[in-house]
Image (cartoon, rainbow, N blue to C red):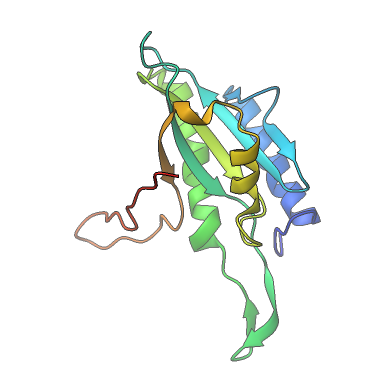
Amino acid sequence: FEGRGTLTPGIQKARAYMEERLKEWKVMPAGGGYELPCKPWCNLGALHLGSDPKLKDEYIVLGSHYDHLGKARKPVDGDDINNGADDNASGSTLNLFVAKALVASKIRTKRSILHLWFDGEEQGLNGSKSFCQDPVVPMNRIVAMVNCDMVGRADDKGANLFGMRSSLQ
């Protein structure tokens, strides 16, 4: 969509597309709807409730961002395209299809799975900051977060997992 910056037609089209798929696949919204509080960025959220009576109130977050800057203001070596398919589109797509697969397969995880698609990440991690300030689930009930970003890289030797780290904040 020639860039998906906050408050652009491109981000609105991307958000509408993802919401349509989530509704079509009957994925439960997180909160009152798929759109989470907008400030002005607009995150999306979906939820799969856990099955274990003791663990269902704990959440594993699958996070991705769906904003993308599109064309650069200052071209580098004559190229003004900021390639976002490898960055945010791959993670957002993975997150969507995990949500679809969980509903379609009727798999019930012990813990609840919270799918988040952040807006405004390219301009300073604004969507994730917004979620942390106004979460749809209690922050102390989130036990893990998997950041789905740049998931399209592999070779013939199998998949790799990079960038593992944790935070006590």
